[in-house]
Amino acid sequence: MHFRSSVLAKTTIADRTIEVVIAVPSDFHFSAGQYVTITLPKLHNESVHEQFRDFSIASSPLRSGEIAIAFRASDSPFKTQLLESPHGATLEIDGPKGIFTLPETVDRSLVFLAGGIGITPFLSMLHYLTETRSLQRVTVLTMNHSQAESPYCQELRSLTTASHTMHLIEHIGRLTETELSEQVERHHDVIWYIAGPPAMVSSTQGTIEKFGISPGDIHIESFTGYA
Ligand SMILES: Cc1cc2nc3c(=O)[nH]c(=O)nc-3n(C[C@H](O)[C@H](O)[C@H](O)COP(=O)(O)OP(=O)(O)OC[C@H]3O[C@@H](n4cnc5c(N)ncnc54)[C@H](O)[C@@H]3O)c2cc1C
Image (cartoon, rainbow, N blue to C red; front, top):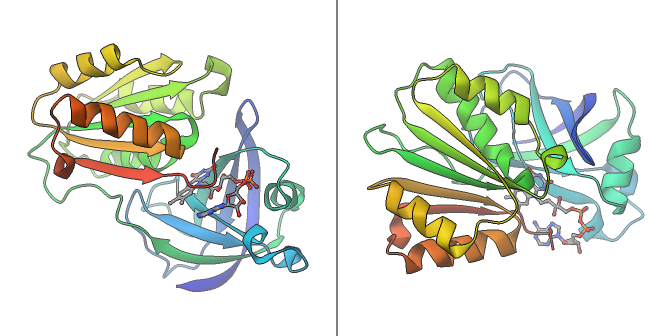
């Protein structure tokens, strides 16, 4: 689906991390974990590569008429322009896209490994599981450089504290190989989901495969564009 949209709200959700709420038509539907491509028409004088960016949808698929995305601020023309965009500014949206979505059955537990802003697709999934009263068991492990840079930390705590099936582990810094191997030992027969900057995703995937997890049990969303 391709449509013109507008900015509804902007909120700072952690250090140098901003959430933008965007209007969507009532027939826009997506699965938790999917992403959209946003183009800023105001950047038509920039090179094509600077005019658009991909963002996982952070809000629930059951929220009607709007979606939320979130990102780390940078001085790229795209983010500078988006941050300067007033309420009502025009955007172009393509999507939904992607196959980083929840399994169809709840018989196996899930582990979500979120590197920094990689929490966005998982937040959508957690809202969806909560709102549908799903019995899906999930362990969410967030990794951030500092507490202040942890996006949506209060929201994640509220969602998981109120749940019997969701468990949150907040980790400051990268997980070492030993810490990852402990997670692999602790979780048997689970499906692994990893999202975040490409280097974090590929090294985490490589490590858990080294500890015996089959590639078929690992889903990844690599936030291409983050160094
Ligand atoms: C499926 C998916 C989901 C994503 N979800 C999020 C999210 O929820 N939050 C978030 O902050 N970021 C997300 N990203 C990354 C986002 O699209 C940006 O690349 C990132 O935020 C850096 O943007 P920037 O303007 O600061 O980049 P810059 O510092 O300007 O550098 C980005 C560089 O990478 C290039 N680039 C950007 N996007 C792509 C791409 N998709 N493929 C190849 N090259 C590219 C640019 O042309 C530029 O040269 C996602 C990426 C993908 C592919």
